[in-house]
Length: 293
Image 1: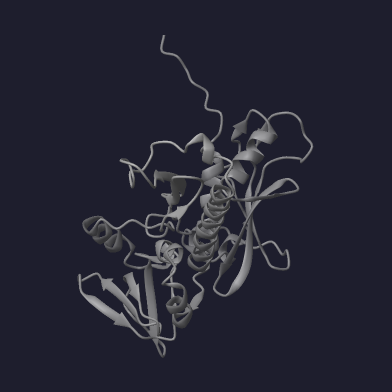
Image 2: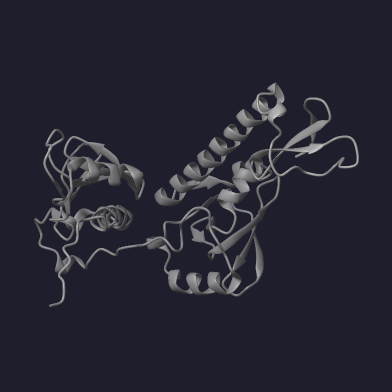
């Protein structure tokens, strides 16, 4: 970002999201100052840049949230849309190096790490052979990792490339649903995360919300789109107005109409994200420590 005049003898700019100043005259002209001079702290131009920096942070967070939604839901994204948003650095940061899969007709392309998008929506990706290939499909998906059959290979290759993802995808913790034969036909709940005790229900609620989960009634909930349908995973966290200690209960799933699903009906993404929520809350429990005698 360029420099603009502010006050007598100073120029200001945004550097790494912060307002900085430099001298515009004298022997120190052009030298960036370590701190913002007192004379500039309430200057209108400084305040304008601060508000702009806040907007940039909010915009970057919104881009990451949108891409995360596309990925968790494995929604098809028009490549033309990606071509339009790619010039925006915030969108690039959110999208770069995510694994994408295009399709021509009914045949999906091989997965690859997204590196560039042209204005027309042509994607440049690096595949598992280390080759740069182009995807010209009308839409692509950013698959949830539980749907990637080559996930272990992608993780290994990403480590070799030094790939980092702003949106957690290939390194996202996943859980695979047990085989249908290992699930009771009428079972509707997982109790793996039950019995986790917290100092208060408020502490349990705060942990759920800090991880991005919604608290409704006595449950922490996680909405998931799986196979084109909407589902909700719910973990019992106790009565809303109970002022005693908090404790987790069973994990269950419902469809969009509120019907309880049997475990055999829960899809792979809904299962993985529900279990991820349960594990995130369970990890914050009070752990009793025993001292060696």
